[in-house]
Length: 422
Image (cartoon, rainbow, N blue to C red; front, side, top):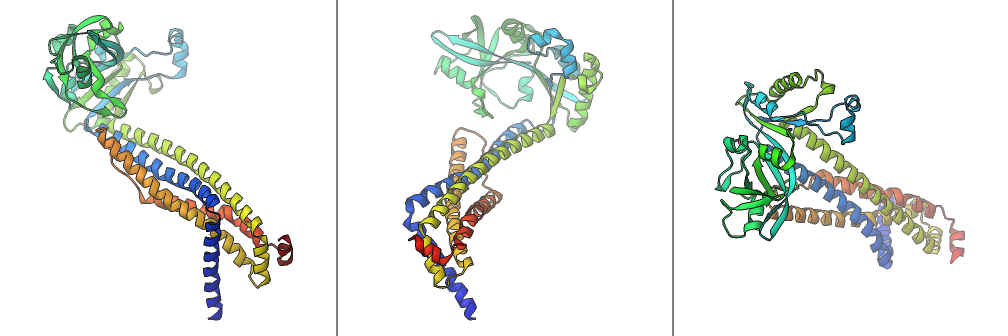
């Protein structure tokens, strides 16, 4: 019983001495704690923002539903590229996906409708107002697949598409920038020096990922191909599937058709790639996981640097209190009492820094979520228990790992030699 009381008494004494020592050197302790706070806060923020970005992208993808596939151009294997010296000289531009491919895909029994698309940048102006915008060339069926509506006027029809009519539908920000409060309908704008008639304005959509959709101008795909870009290919085709059709099965059907049309024959020669919702989710999840892991590793390195700072502080503390260590040992303090006292100081530093770091990290994560929602982004706040436990555990391990060696060195000091230092 007496031994137990003695252990409790020594433990209380160690806490009191550790607190007094850290309080006595407030500036040094504060600087050490700041390093831990930054590292721990960054772990919380990185994991929270990573989950928020993943949720944002997946929610945007889910808005399309699960009954679609997207066919995109794809750079083929290196052997085929080498065969094409012209492609090598021009930076490998794949031009084999065309509107004829889109028409063939549309005739498949699994496809309900589709649109082809191509994009370019152009200067759009009216009177003295001008801006650089993305011009989105799409088929007339675009609005039957995309859920966004045209709030003023109308979208272009198939006749205007096939005749390459000089008409455009403006994103809401473009309309506001060029026309202010005036109605842009039936007015003309200049795109790369050529006149186009405004026939509609899309509803405000906000940002898709990191692209402001309201700054996009929509035009018939053949208009963009012939009058703005001088090309015949498309960049992608988005197909809406009939009810009940499995996207993976539809992807196989389209793959077979395009391999026959493009005469590729085998997967390694494919100049196209087909995405489904399942594949998109996998890609987004893997990319976000990789980026989050990399950032956590970098954050871990910053915590290790903070740990080196703790070790340095503990060495200085041992050097300053050598006489105190010798006196305590002369009065009966055991090696483990001295070791535990200094180890406890290191753990207290990291624990305080860890708790403050968790609070700062959570606060910044909440602030990011609020700002994202104010920007009309579909952003969910994620502060996982795992990130908090990971932060606490890492802070504790840093304190023990970097505080243990200086604490053991202090415990090994001989009483008489230590007292002679003073």
